[in-house]
Length: 305
Image (cartoon, rainbow, N blue to C red; front, side, top):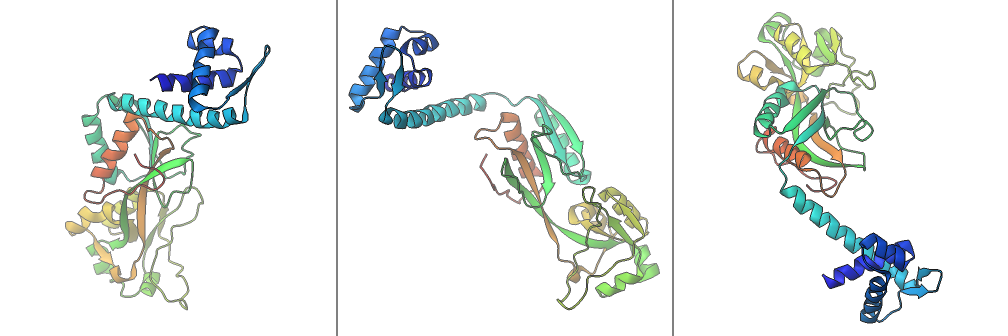
């Protein structure tokens, strides 16, 4: 502890350029500060300050030692913060942005509320690409690979996208055998809110084959609408597997051209970078990674929790 106190005294003197000011900051006399610095210089075998009646300035060795001392004290402070946070129960408002995938996350969020009643969830469902830091979100869930270096990220899980239609629709219109058959069908499309572009249906094709210009029977910006219309026999939809799993199991929907669809997607959790995320962020990230895609371990990308 004496050595640690020496670091603290040294940094205060170097930053204030004064024994008197450093003593005032630390609540001790200028004389005690001077003696502490002298003991440190004797221990290190170097002169840390140039002293005059008007000022105290670090020597070249003092500047080098100042940089290292700041790092040491910062690490100690961070360790103390981490330990203190570990003993504090997660609580407070947690502002979260999520894509429009209620069927995937609603049950998990309900379980989270039950397990952490002291955390107030403030949920914003939107496929808009939010600015996590500027808009004040604690955590966001988004598809695609993270690109913002200001954010920490953890992989939540992956999913496939499938072409689906109801048995009644396929009985009436026929089942497509090859991708070009889709040109004779009603297609239910998704529009990206940020770009206004329609989602491309990822169909396997050779380099010589052009991308199909699919018919448009309906355009919307939600999974639920496309799922509802597909269940009602109004066309073929391109949907993530988690949104149609139950309907496929119950036979309400059938897959179409499964050997020709190839897109896989990923969900990631993103939050403002910090060596020590708050307890509420920590438990939320861990909870979702364990529950949203059971059995699929999340992968840390930028930094570990």
